[in-house]
Image (tube, rainbow over all chains, first blue to last red; front, side, top):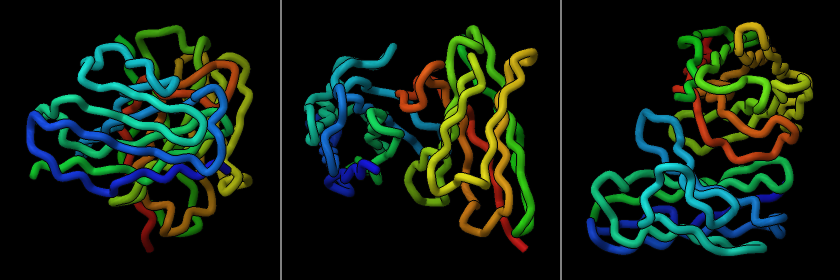
Length: 107
Length: 121
């Protein structure tokens, strides 16, 4: 099973700042089958990025994904108030596993 | 618009079974698969398994093999997840999510609203 480790656990930032979230896999993720989700309290996750770098439908361009192999990054260029949430990475190249999440909180 | 609407909250005793439904609308049901993902209170996401609504093929997470069964009813565009021999650590919100029709590993572009299953004596 591919284990995904997200860092940091919590990111404290102010609106307008840049957020950089990391997701590291225990082995290479085939064909960059890596997705990112946003989850707010009491809500289902929402797909942001798939294929490591493709934005899902309706996702603002301040969200971007990059990386390949075992190291992936989600960047939020300028945090909006609605972006404070928990973010999960998921690999779907070999079965499916999720990272433990990164909470982006207001500083 | 694509919607996945799940059945309501359940309270079960240890050792019992639970069956959660997920009714799809707004797309061709048999062109996709449905995965189930659960989230224990305050915890992360755990993939449970997948069923193809196209041909009924399934793929279950190893840790749940033998306790979980996923089915579909194409006449009503509904997917079901049954979990047996419930334990307290099965207490979680259970989500259905739309994925690929042909393969289990997939991104999940639409999610149900979640169903809270509480296992308690």
